[in-house]
Length: 266
Image (cartoon, rainbow, N blue to C red; front, top):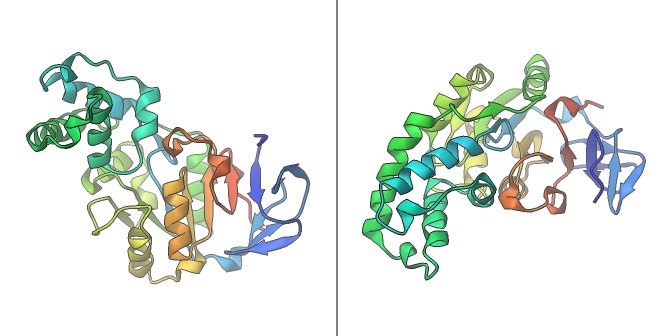
């Protein structure tokens, strides 16, 4: 799948997809077109935006918190060096999954997954260290402010839905100057189930008083896309995020952009 500038759309030529996406133009590759895809302003009332990998590059925060967590654990965990390319494959499904994935990766027999005492120690250490590093090793992606400003100026309601714990998410958004865009932050601990389950998206739509079909989900991974599809929301993905280390263009989405600043109205 070629990765050119601007907007990549999975849809037939000249069609209108869910959420009022108009696709009309030049084919870049199988089932994709570029540049002239637009969402109809009258088709959307709200936007739900993911956090990690979509608005903020937080791999550095995750890597630092995990490294400090491991230092508090017994061998072989306290001798392991955490690299961001490994973390990239593990993030996106919540803190519990991230910690268990790291412990299991280090323990080749995956005994760590069954060791409740070890996990509880790791969880406590991770929470403590993440508070220390939250926002220190992360940065807002280029184009994010422009995209958020556009949606705000258009009068769209905006909610951040992330699998990151709510307290961590709110702190990070405030630290990066993004908190003011969102009327609500739905973290991974806010409802019973996390993305890719549709529950957090449906909860956000209910809180905003909008229909899922008129709410655009913006994310960076299959987690976001699957949740959006199940909730009935149109979905826009960014090409620069994590997606568990897999190519984002293989994900079922209405469109893929290289920057939120590339979003266009019909």
